[in-house]
Image (cartoon, rainbow, N blue to C red; front, side, top):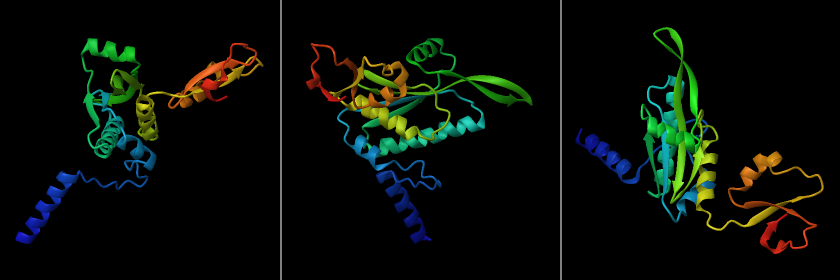
Length: 211
């Protein structure tokens, strides 16, 4: 009995000391990729992630909240404290609601039941990733599938100090940047995106990494 008690105490101590967590999910949804680990292990500035989640969500959405928290725990552990997080319920704070909606956090309309009656619940399920004075917004989190990509991309985008330029050539009926919004958004994580016209006599191509 004494040996069993000693083993239990040792396991608890090691789990507390080294923040051990096992990912037993089939799809390893809480096991961060090597690329993510490399990025968050080399952060020069701390990152704060504020998750805006309403309380008393329906079970399916409460699971999203729990899974998102578990994912953030992994980010915090791997970053050795450089990434901190908190969960905030906007609740009935109208001023806070106004501020987060101005930032781009969406108020979702969630179907549910209460006392055998169908109802629509207004709720927040978004996040803000902040580094210094700059921030990125995840407006609505309805699933944690693919969330590692969005979190890591946002952190990488905030951590890059001087982004090289890339440009799309214009003037020959090419699509505009508005028509390439998804491509521009993806590129903007690591690059500053511009447009150029090759007929411009004052054009300096030396500043661009790629056309």
